[in-house]
Image 1 (cartoon, rainbow, N blue to C red):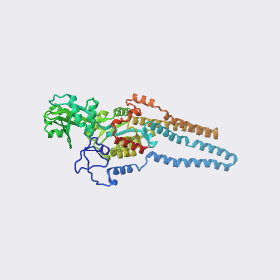
Image 2: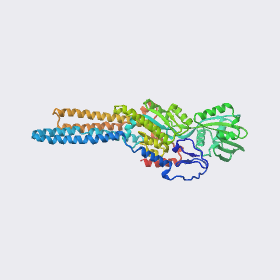
Image 3: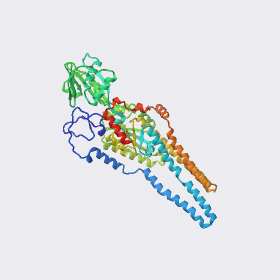
Image 4: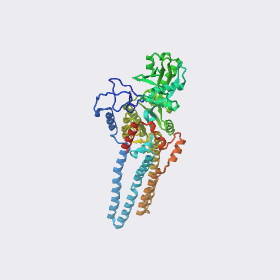
Length: 527
């Protein structure tokens, strides 16, 4: 089996047979070595193709950037030309007229200077970027803060974003005609799964530990992997099998299960779980279990909080429909908001359609503040094309390096509460910029009114310009003063919990050495 979750979004390991296609970037999670034949150069690999797709998606600039460039090219020359004319033409009508118009020209240039308006945006950006960095949110450019504040739709990847990309034991029942206790049967199951390296095995062993069930110290021999079915071993001279339905149908054990057990396990499967059984020689099937991909602790609260903020939530995943619906229901999503079995290109198409729909609605909105943005949140290689085409994209810090390189924002601790914080910060940035612009224009208008009536001096014009610059700078830097206590109180009152850096850091015992090294390397590259 190989783990292709970072390539396709499929949370469950995929069984590969001789002749099966293996994508670059897949991780061997089986117990045997794989001999893989290279069929494409690095330039034609799946990752390279997706990089080319992202580059094509990023070639065109935003409408806002084009508007700002066009405005700057027109406004600056007009003000400069007007000031030169006022300071020179007046002298043709005499010294008194020359001095009068030169003074008014200088006053007009000082008043018309857009410094307070221009500086209000970068100082607000810098304060917000610094405050976000302190929270573990890395933002590439300040403009993405504004896009965060305008988000009306968010598309989440499932595996590794809304879920932990690690399986958890959901159900374990003792079944059949056995005199063994649940603790004894669970101990046998944990003993069988302990030597295995499959992610499902890890979930079962961890589930037993959570219930404080000790692995029995019994002699186990001939522990053997049954490809595509499960495992078998001999414990205390009895053959024990653990695996899926296919294994026990082959052993003619499944047909002997009571109908109510079959109905229960089928319900587990329909809810998106992976169902397995354990049998002991002479007793038949004695236990049934269900393993599922666990959602993040904070995911449900964050999704509910985002909905309360009026943001549309959808899920885009390459995983199977049943697994996607299972996760979606736990998060409170409707089935119509869950898109499953998607290829990376199909995810990108979904985002592109949503972006076009929002842009169409924006053309009908006359107000600058009514702009709408689409966000994509993901962590894997398969999410990169969709991340590249969204108005603003967010990558999980524990995800693939290509996802973090493509995304506009990275949540270094992979805590979705940071996403909630970023959106709130984006809205504060927009509000602060509007305040600064309005304040600057009002001050300019007042001084200009005095200038027209001849009551404004050059020093008053310069003083108002510098004073308004200082005022908007201080107003922008107030974003730095948002304490962690305020954010924690606001989040607790709004459903989602906030965690300190120690709380959201993954316990060392749950991280493999390979993942730790990989994460540190990616953090280093990001920095």
